[in-house]
Image (cartoon, rainbow, N blue to C red; front, side, top):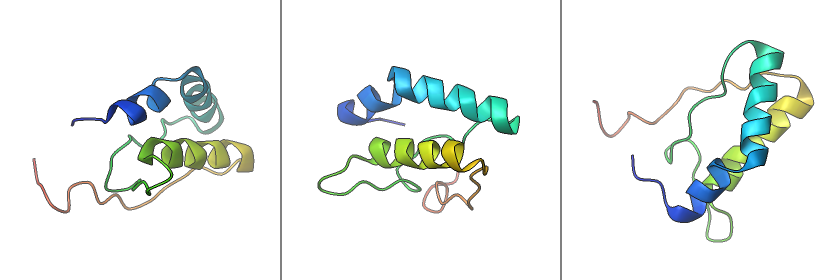
Length: 77
């Protein structure tokens, strides 16, 4: 999958790594992978920022985040 440069910078940030590590330690599982179908950006907010905010809220709320992913709704591979 191609990731826009602005999203790549956010996803590879130290904060993202730290939050993903905390999530794994708390819940014993990894946070869902980033994709544009489940985390749609807006004109003002990049998709990766929404992903990071969702990850942060899950860690702070002590509740694992689970959704039914839509990443394969259009393409099946």
